[in-house]
Image (cartoon, rainbow, N blue to C red):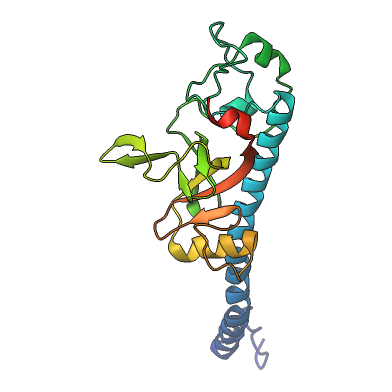
Length: 227
């Protein structure tokens, strides 16, 4: 009809689009860093939580099996392997004697699963945690006084670590790898507190300068350390 204005097409004008994008950019500048900080904070919390859960499982396992400790995470998740040649005087506990089988009596005392994670029977297996860190399947003895694990690896060969003494106070330790020094410090501050001066020799979370750390999950009674 002559003189009738055609209806305007629906949509945003260029000015409206520019203003909207500008507002979104401003909001992103405030929201994204906050979300990233929360995500960054969650990583050490996850690691500490995972280590705490495994530690509690190890202690419950030790209580059920009368101070005999698991040798790997799979011992906490699946019924124990039995070796009839094991004896109470020399239990086949891999944390102490480095075998992975137990007596029939010990297997009967198992009340697991103590953990709900899926753990491989591969000694070199790992469970992932925060910061893409890895918790080793195999548990180790750790000399609390010297601040060293029982075994060290050099050129792929495992040997007794210098300074390790089986008559010192020992603990069942959980090995954590894959973290940077800064990430290790964050986890250490969360577990042992930021005022700790010597993280390799103090507290439950022990680390030096490399990317390997040990969380002391449970003390080994002196009567079992010499086996």
